[in-house]
Length: 383
Image (cartoon, rainbow, N blue to C red; front, side, top):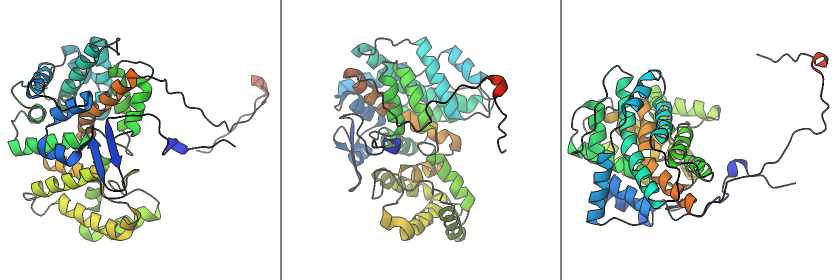
């Protein structure tokens, strides 16, 4: 009997120098630099440069990279028309996936192993994803999309395109750090999906579209949306024990808790918890953060000993909620950040490419006879 590893759990599928995780000690590094140091000292675009090029940029390099991003934020009218044609009730992740795939038709990137192609494609994707997310968020409400402003930072510009208001600098800084914390996390489901696509030497737009589709699922990026829905369903602290009991009885997940790798609290969640508490100072009596802390305390008492603790999704949704961002935009924002990590792995895959072609264990029948159509009996399936 051949060995079988459901979901390829724990099976190394690639070698990488992009990021490192030590789940036993709660360590996450991008290109060897601790995530806490990047959150304190870096910016999202500087971190994106680090992930893409395996080093921190010089001052001049960062200025050029930032300028290139600013110059490529705009999207073509045809892409805006595409977004307008999509169903208003559709999920923004579907709109993002469709529009990213369409970008590849306007900006062909066939020579994926050429450095110039990779750089320009990375710039366009990092620059345009926030514009796509903000544009669909407004267009679905019947509002006009807001053109980007070159004089605003990456985080400021996105929040401006959502609201047409320049955000408070402190708020923009928190949002920028959240992007850093979401930018990369080794071989996760969406990264693997993107790498499989990249291994066919498909262009980066196709790669990122594939990864976005994987990120949408509630067991991956969609979990931050589910956390808000969970907290709103719980509504009050006295309902927490009953809610958790019901979930455990039905063998259902408590969203925002547990991680395939971390056996301690996710280091990203620790940083985000501090931001959520900072924003909670103005929350008044309707505090999702206070409710979330009570949920965390209950979960720690019940399953903390099993290593089931808050992950990055638990507090990120609370931060975005306090910023007034619509819940179904949380995962597209995740994608805006993670595109840097996806591209870093994509380019790594292009360099020493091996087509991903896993095997399977067949469990079906053999030597079944073919029955003529008039000899087949009708099989009624239960509704």
